[in-house]
Length: 350
Picture (tube, rainbow, N blue to C red):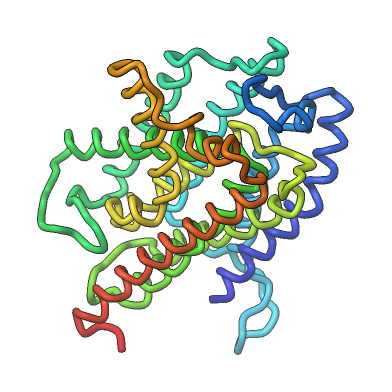
């Protein structure tokens, strides 16, 4: 429990104080956001410092790693020691940093070109696939179960090939889904804090009840998720509307990649559909819009992703953000409730 609190607190403190420094440096080098002209009401965001996701990534990694340094232990007093870092948690760190690097390259190309066009779809997707492939290989080496799982395994063994395909889909789909959602100030930062909070609870419960379903390294995964909660909440302090800094693709893709990694490593792959219901909704809105326009020549929404649809209907940006946070909170509550209910039904928890 102390590790969870320490990891989250360290990440929060690092990001809350590092972000203003990042804002000044980004302004100094004129690294600002480029806004699409068709997105009404967003032109005031033109030039707002972007690539703030770098601070989030650094905060998560440092908060997680430093929390393993022990200077005091109850009963033993002051004594320095280093707690072992689990290899599964290192895979989560890899997913975070790896997807973040792809996002950083995308943001940098936008900055170099001075317009809202980053990496081509081919290069962006190729990079995401490479990160996902390495993660899938590492997960298999680390002994991650190949069984398809909701709250716990469903008895469906995917085997190495289908497991690899599932990992590829989950990492790329979640990274892109979160990236699509990142169109309003604080929307991703606030909603991702809720999802990561769910994984803190899931990892902690799994570590406390190994006789029900053994998930090696669950506590360390919970510590990583706690660092993510602290980092994104601290970033939200500066990213809340009107944003003083934007996370950019480096932030949204890193957040999505780490989120999918936690679902795979805690064996809750299908539960992520519910926990990340907001991102599923945003992604589906884009798919439906493209399909309808290409097949029928008509648009379902005024603009996709769906948060822009409500903006174009006249909803203030802050209203859309708060209501979408509510949707995310409801989905997370349902997901955690289903997780808890399954454990109660097994007679493991009171």
